[in-house]
Structure formats: structure tokens, C-alpha cells
Image (cartoon, rainbow, N blue to C red; front, side, top):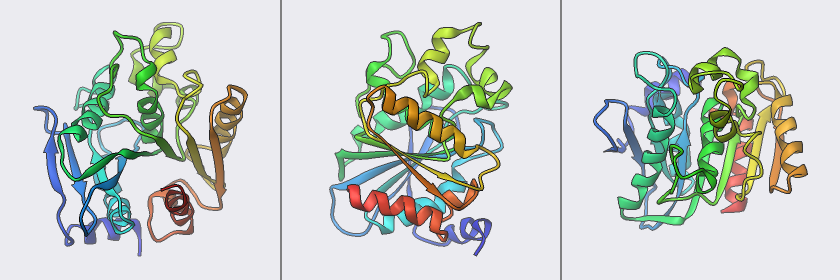
Length: 258
């Protein structure tokens, strides 16, 4: 079944609860709970789409349903994006931080077992969020109230220079224009992270090449940061399709580590 069809069918299943963290229509998260009593481990799910408005959390719903089947409370995050949403620096980062911190107000969750799960541009946001405790006091997202214990980065944009002009739009300038923003937001510049990171990347990915994850993993190891790289045979989209071996490889790592 195609991912598009899975998204359509997911609307017929048990509806998630909706939680707001701001007045903007896209300052919202959906919580998909597993059956059974909590407290449940949490997967914070951050969608990709190169931080641009046409792409939404809807694309991650099949993945969230699969995570709930596996016993995770899946927290599907929406955030303001480039374009009509008014996203970029600092709004996109403030939204992700606020969405994560909102978990502290929800009962039935095990906040000592939180995994950040980000795909593509969402992988960049997941890696950024994992380092919030190290941010300068005046940075967006500083002083987190809720933190994650690990990161699962799926075909992540782990080096913002590879995203070209879109990354410059996200941060409001080039590395020479706003070097402090790049130092905070670019995962490869923000090493080392204190939490373990697992990168999963498809060898046939033509959107974000697997070499990006290889370079990040090498830089993380050199910096003494805990990192694992898993290469799978699929393409960019297969990593968020629960029916594929690519996602099952990532989910297998989740099960072993939980």
C-alpha cells in the first residue's frame, strides 16, 4: 500500500488527542497513545519538507500509528514553516521547543524515556532540540523543561550547508551573515551532543544523500559524541513508510534500545 493511501486510511482509525501550544493554527500537536495503562515511553515526531509550508505533520501519521502499536506515545508536532506560516528564525525553533515542553503538562507519559524522531528537515530539528540544554541563554529554545534521552534521525539534514538557499531562508542569512544562528541550528556545527544519536539513511536517497549522515557520524565520533549509523537500501520516503524494510530497521533499533 502506498504511503498516500496509508495516510488516507489513517483518518479512519482511532483519532489522536489534539493539544495546542499557541494561537497560530499550526502551533498544535497530535498525541497517539498505545493501548494499555501508562506511563508510556514517548516518541516526539518531527516531520520534514525542507521547513516549507506545503508539508505538514499529516505525512507522519502512519508512522505515529505504527509507533503507538509498538507501545510508544507518539507526539506528532506541527510548527510554523517558511512561507505563509511566518516560520523561520526564531519562530520554527520556538515552536518545536514549546511543543516538546508541553509534554510536561500531560499525564500518563514517561518523560524519562523520550526519543526524538525526525525525518529530513525534521531530523535537523530533532538534532537541534537534543542540544537545547547547551544553548546560550538568549537563544530560542534555551532552558528546556522537557528533554530527550536519545535521537533517531531519519535521512536527516545534518549539515545545513547542504540545504543551500533554503537553509539561509530558514536562518535569515548565510553563515557569514548570522554565524551565531548557524552555530546553534546546524547539527554538524553544534557537536558534540550529550545524548546518543542514531542515523538511519537510505542508500538510494536522492533528496538527502547518505554521504551527509556519514559525514555527521564521522564528525560526531571525532568529537567524542555517541553516534550510530544504519544504512538501509531504500530511498528518502521509505523511512517514514511503516510498510517498508527501511522503517522496520529503524523501529527495530527503537525496540532494542527501549
